[in-house]
Length: 139
Image (cartoon, rainbow, N blue to C red; front, side, top):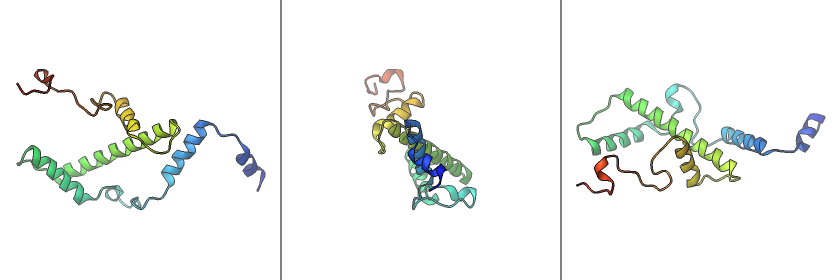
């Protein structure tokens, strides 16, 4: 062991250093679902076909005549995966700041709240969007 390693081993760790080390482990840990980056399309975590089927299912429940061009579904998948990655990363940071390694619902709620007013992030309920629906009735 040389002097640099010896000093590194004995240096006191601050919370910030621990958080930094934990995030470094997260970003370098090998996951069986992680793929090597070969081209822009290979970096997706959700397989293309199941995502397309989900989009189709949701779209058909809204409007049976709704159709998407391929590039629109690709853009939707890119955005959805970027948002989910952001949510999970920020939730993990919130858990680490709270002294935990496990993400809890309250961490995700906090991230949603920090994003700026996602209604119902804490309660699981959303406010009615129309003025006449305060009590949830369709009068």
